[in-house]
Image (cartoon, rainbow, N blue to C red; front, top):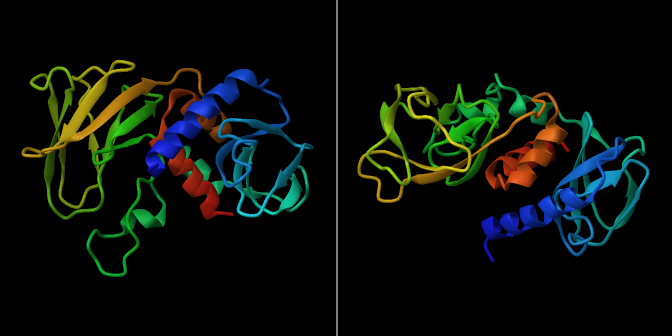
Length: 245
C-alpha cells in the first residue's frame, strides 16, 4: 500500500476518532501515528495531558498539544504533561500563519546539486504540482505556489467539469507565488485542474472551505484538516512538528 493510501486511511480513521471523542480541554491531538500501536492511537484521536501512553518498539506518535509539539517514540510509557516531553511548535505556527513563507528551506533551487529540496512554506498556499484535497480558510485571497524557478510560467486553473471555463495565473521569473484569480469562484467540494499548456496530467485539487477555524490555533487547524481529508496539508504540519522534535 502506498504512503498516500496509508495517509488517506489514517485520515478516515482520524475523522471517526474525532467524531467519537469528546473535545476535552486538556488534551492533545494525534497528527501522525505509526508502528504496532497505530491502531490504539489513530490520527485524529485525543490524548489527555495525564493519560499514560504506552508505546512498543517501532512506534512513533506526533501530538499537537496547545502551544507544544510532542514526538514520542517507543518503547516506553509517556505522559504529555511530563516536563521535558515537549518542544515549542514555532515551525508549525509559521506554517499556519496567513503571512507565512519565511522559512529558509524555500530558498532552495531546483536541480542544484546538494541543495535542500524546496517545500511549500505555508499551509494555505496551493501547490501547483500536488493533487489532492486542499482545505482553505479564505477563498477571497488564494495564492498558488511552485518550487523555485528563474523562468516565468503560466498555469491554467479550471473546474474539472468545465475545462474551457478557467483562468490563468502567471508566475514571474524568480517568483514562487501567483494569485488565483478571484474571477474563478471557488465552490466547496468542487474539483479543479491546475497545469501548464501541454501538461498530460495536470494537478487535480478538490477544495474544502473551512469556517470558524482559529488561524492561530494549529491544533484546531489539524483537527479540521483531519475531518476534511486534507492529507497534503496534514503532512505539512507533521513534517514541521517533527522537524523541531
